[in-house]
Length: 194
Image (tube, rainbow, N blue to C red; front, side, top):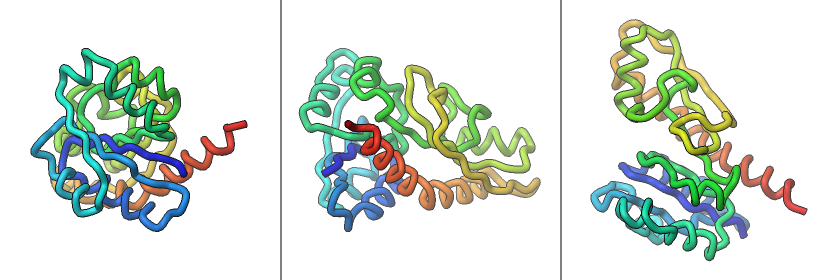
């Protein structure tokens, strides 16, 4: 059984789509949803999906290795960030090399980096007058949005699109592609094992 842990800080729509995608799988499970936000909508979604939730604060995450050790002890195969807003600690990245992935709501390397998330990204795309936006799924490294790109998908942006319009188009791409790309990454991990 391959075990995925989801990290989320917000509403959890991507986490829910991922959990639904793997719900009938006999060889993949979403074993845990981890959040730094006790008011996050993802917590209610996790309860409805019968997935355990772990809450933590900044001190526990950055000043101890308890989260890293917990994930090692649970034999986690893949860590998936689904709207998680904090930079991952170095010890966690080193413990799970090429096993932490994230989705960004734009076509990296444009509109990435610290502070570029959610609506801020869509506002920047609209302000730049870009004719397309999209999603980037990438491995996580020690910098925001700079890990190796795994997959990108695009959507058109018109001059009349508001940031909300762009957000809706991008979210549709996220829900369509993220679960499938996660499955592909898991399959490649299986092929890489002796």
